[in-house]
Image (cartoon, rainbow, N blue to C red; front, side):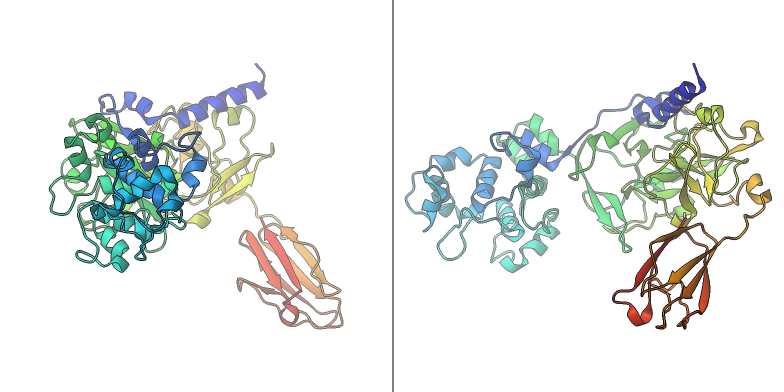
Length: 542
């Protein structure tokens, strides 16, 4: 086998290990973990489809069907179907109906008459004697009906104008901002209504429908569990919560042993578990799993990381555990592309999203990899398309280089990051100290490589931008640290002003020049102050 083939095989094996499902990884823990319990995660649309409420169009419940807007008549029929009243409504013979019932078509007119004569289901029309069956339902209209189905009366328990706020108090809010309201939004509202407790009741609407045999106990299991929601912190970062808005966390010490948190730790950080989950649309059910801990307790996982609550989070929106002791972190969305693991001897170190260790090569100078050929076969380059990191790390510390083969490699403080091909699972640190030149990256103490500290700094570069004919010329691409000289060739005065305020030259007479130096990589848009409406330029610093 030639070197190129060996490199591809080794790289493929390394990636396979890096992406290995956590259920497989659990087979070889420092503290043995029992086989993972089954967890079923489903979206709202999947759940109501399995319940037979959503049936779709001629093609079934497809993505295009879920994206269609929901009419008032359609929403009404689906609610009746959900509570087992659809056939009764279709065969209704009452003659009193809405004034515009004919717009619904002959087959649906009995349904409107049924709704007209059964106001307890919340469809009282538009207040003008009409129903407007083909109009798109609004979230306010829909949630008003959901509240009525739970035994709350508009005009008595809540004002119609306050429908959304009142519904939110009862746990109905996940589709409140939907505009326009779609079949997917309807599915979300239906599931949260099923999981809500009716006015004056002690069990959920779902349990009541199971007891009355409208929904089978087996199908009812689809919604008989916890919800996963996505909330935002005050600075706009998205993170996972349970259905009550309580934040969920990961523990960076859960590397080789998923049961690291014991005793007083568990008192402060209770485990999160449910056999059944309803997850937000767009999330992948395969990201959720479960483990049986060494103490026998079951615990949910997300991308292999066990999930915890924090004792000091007392209400929805609390995130008091974020960054605690630099080992507890929120489950961010999108998930961390670069995270932290913790080892008793090494402290915190960089890992990929699955918890697989990342390394630096002490022979690499800043901004370059000297690991090629057989070296790269054993130490595959790590690359993340985007940088999502835990609290305490700095986004500006991460970048990327282009390798000699044209591929990208992520860097930390300018130094390339690698996997080790013998690390078969999370928690493995088999690459640590290999040859005394390969090491994990502790971000708190890492200051660079030996090669990076001894390599002389490259000679400074200088480029010139000639301002001519009211133009800065084409986009300029330079290396960080380059000195840039602006020379004015026009009779009119010009200057160069960065839009982000990073630089501003004086107004230059014809023949005058000014210099700037850009040390930080990035894209710099700039303009001439006297002619800013049309005279603009761009500098890209690599």
